[in-house]
Image (tube, rainbow, N blue to C red; front, side, top):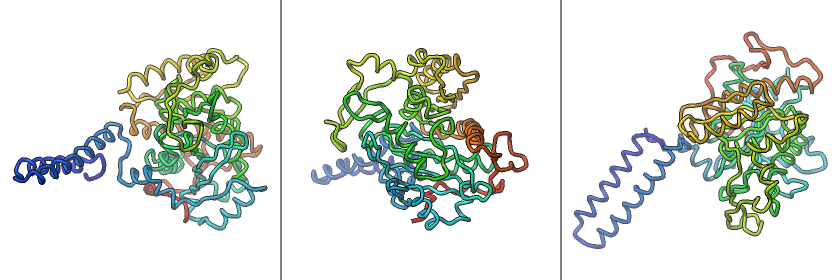
Length: 419
């Protein structure tokens, strides 16, 4: 009732606003009238913000809002260095020291690192989640596939955890044998909440696609010893701006990903918000980065470029979703699906009740993971060149077992690391 979208919270704001207006009307001294009128702006403003949040169904709880906006939750996540001569060995030593094997074999482990692109020199925060199987004996020598998850704008990697609740959703899917284990990699795609880079290689600026699509996966594969290198063993997925990123990266960097999930994405670049003077932290400037570069504009317009990719070029398999209440999202997804269908036998498209909202992305997340991870597991089995761990009874074809018993309550969405 008193959560950000609760009826009780809205009633409190209405009562507070009404009480202050009553004070304005009844106060006899001008100073008190002015004071009450100024105070009335506060519940009115909060009501407007809460109404927008409810419309987009973004922050379902106060904890999710505080963690996402302040980065408070990130302070409790273990942080590991991605540099050094042998980052994988050092990471494994740190992991062995910091983790609780029994707990992590049930819940998995989330940590944070800063990845600096060797070519782009971009340095940003990346969240990484290791699934429970990473800590289970049957998987001791198994090399895991990975999924790179790309957030929207404004947004940050923590939105996947705090807002979309990807970790408890994934744990449930694994427990129900509807998904297979994969490492989740959540990079910062914009370099700050005030920017919107759209994972594009700006001809005169930041090479964001190179960083997100090439450098982050390559560094992560070196950092975490049992992650397979980029290729068909990796997937990429995103919502809203991140959905555009996933669609565009899949076409422009096909050798790095085998599967792509697009949740309420768009399929042509829009105006970006880039740092002025290409300086990190500078005031954002609105700019269409491909102005004067028509060929680059086409190459980064998935709905157009997919018709130009040579037939012999491998493309990732696509999965699409859109909210039924946003006709533009649905039309764009259906049009892109028709183009992809010329290259892919079956192109899933989930139309979910709702608009361009967090509720739609949360609802789409489970089906997307259930579609993508079994296929990644098949690719991983080939890459491992060994028979994967035996499936438990009742598991669907293409899935791996989990030691977490069915029916066990799912833990609340929280940071799963150890300080």
